[in-house]
Image (cartoon, rainbow, N blue to C red; front, side, top):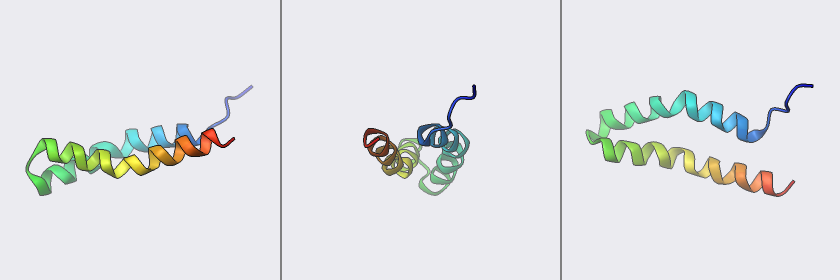
Length: 58
């Protein structure tokens, strides 16, 4: 039996694929790796919360 692909799984896949891209662009524009990390994390933060809320409502 196959494992059901969850919204959390989709988020992890997107995060894994795109975090580096977002970070590199943020670093290019900010010139500071601490700021670039924060920008990249902030880009994904609302989605983490959304996944948690949706999973808890089931």
